[in-house]
Length: 167
Image 1 (cartoon, rainbow, N blue to C red):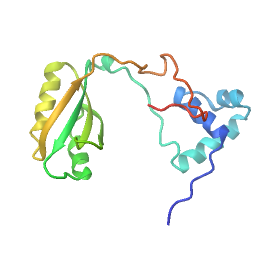
Image 2: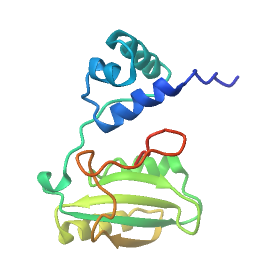
Image 3: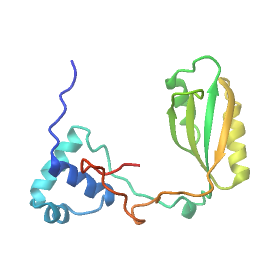
């Protein structure tokens, strides 16, 4: 039986947008900005957490500050159809992989990799290529970011429906 989608109104959208912009914003600050009490904002946030609209809160860290100065994407092509479950098991063994997803098109998966330098990236790439189900890879080094990386940078425009653009 499908789960019922919880009600999600314009005030919820504004709360989510405020938390995306800065997850440390207090309920009182959010409430003052959107015309609710801190208690009402907390109730709404609690409801959105219980219904998995909000799945967590996180800190945004500049990767270079942690020594991760090289960034790349790797298209992974698998022998036969490696199940997504198997791909997920393998990518969990690589702390350098910051995001991984199955994709449409010729590639089976796309990996986002961060490394300390090009040599480290090459070592990670060779380990990925050595996985028994990997037929080939294509990698793309990131030269620069065209959109801001952090909430401190220029804010993104709101989508036409008022929802925040998520990255």
